[in-house]
Length: 609
Ligand code: F6R
Image 1 (cartoon, protein in one colour):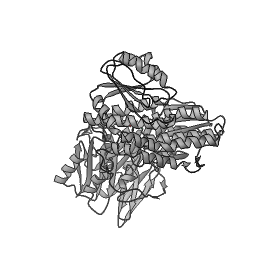
Image 2 (cartoon, helix red, strand yellow):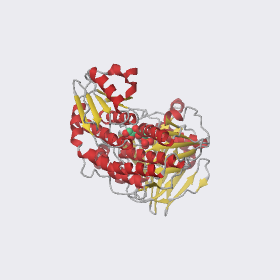
Image 3 (tube, rainbow, N blue to C red):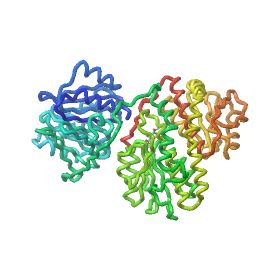
């Protein structure tokens, strides 16, 4: 989603703004722009499409100035054109925005009735005109900003520069993330700390409602006001983030690299939670599962939601705890029944997803213990939840989640084991056996990846399809859901996943010779039932592709192919078959020629509802 950079410096900032934006590209965007102040004018450069288009323009016409703002836009209000690209500006003020101004229509109508002319279709543009109006009334920059943002409803992070005062840069946030980066002779704003990392690792995470006024005088200073306009001190953190540009390391795409990193990331995540020698769980997990009335609520969006669906099987089977799973976007508006015995787990790769964050704050306000399972240590969720557990996937650049998803599964599985142990449902011997199975998973994933050419062939075949069906039972059902989502996201093939037992209740009507079926069918306790469902689909003329470890399995169909995967236990299968569906989606997209790492319309960090 939209990314923001702001720089107040003694040096030229034009190229640095673009450099900062390049570290926000992973978030997903469809246009970009920068603005600087020079010789009492606001200079802007904006371009639709990738950052390269903006770079090319700036190379031809460099933007001078030592204060500036930059933006990558993920279109919400108005198509991804140059006209709608940020920064938006009047003669005196320029603004970049991440989030949505929900009451923009009312504000816009009021401004239009006062003869204000709008240049774009965006919600953001109202912010510039509101500030401009306050400035025209002779108000100070600070008051003009504070009074303007008081009129806004919705979510925003804003960075603002002023023609008449090139020594000031203002940042403010409500709902959307914004960090302040501090150096002796430069100050920065960024949507995340990573975007600022090569410049400074002294970071202040602005809190909800904060406004930072950054000033250049004989030295660089800043003041932070909280949501009540009180001057506050915020902690400054010294981070230790990698600064090198993310590299594909010889792989053709980040996604493929990240798929191949899974043996390592799964091992790292597992070893952060268990002792591999004693085969015990490290007793540092932040949830007291001994409360007999405890209910677990798992809340997330997208793939992270599917990780939660998988975890429900584990918590209920292994730990016998009632566990409910919710989409964050539904949970937050449903007026859910919660009580103080509920432990709410919020699962998010980015830790910034707006709906999940809002659901977390709701549960916290209702007195529940909130635990965030996130991949970004300083993310909003990590900071907002009572406790957090890290997935150790490392930065994930491909928009479609792969290694972060499997690391989430790993954390959730160990948590279910820990819960079962705390409730004395399983003994130490069973825990040790379970951990042994988990320790084998990285090895199984490596085996899957050794035979990647099989997925290449299947991907080639699937790239010709317009629709596809995925089925699975038990824990293979969330794998099927994840497979269908991955395929949709990166190959744009319409794919649906069903619990295999549900096929007859409607979806079987979709079956025809042009709709391949991909069955997740390891030889487990659900296998016989799934095999019958596969047979029913084959009989109706669908091409059938089965992921299985059962070499005997065969069905008569117009087209049938099995991909054999390693034989493993039910828990390890969740990881093995997930890796397989990731590879299928990857190769299908590759053969279709779609943009694997930055698929159309998608964003890595979903910071609007
Ligand atoms: C799918 C994918 C998304 C995310 C979803 C939630 O490949 O990555 O569906 O899972 O947008 O994002 P996080 O996990 O950051 O909360």
